[in-house]
Length: 79
Image 1 (cartoon, rainbow, N blue to C red):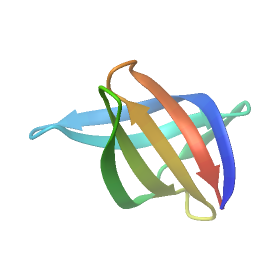
Image 2 (image 1 turned 120 degrees about the horizontal axis):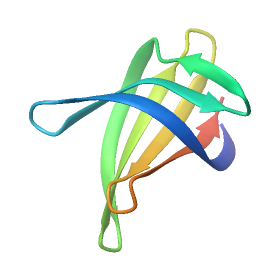
Image 3 (image 1 turned 30 degrees about the vertical axis):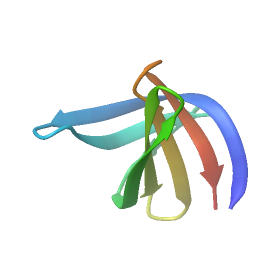
Image 4 (image 1 turned 30 degrees about the horizontal axis):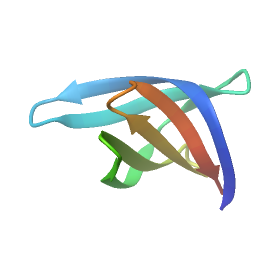
């Protein structure tokens, strides 16, 4: 996977039990629809909890990260 680390805009659905599901995201002036979340995990970075999502648009695989402390989404990698 190629490391990216760019802040992006993401549309999400927040569900019960602290569930977060990305629906689409914008990257470099292009909108990508999330067809599948293949894996998700969370980690601590200092005081912040960061939620990671491996998502596919049907053609490519992306890693999205949401920092719950700063409320910033980032695209961290693409394959």
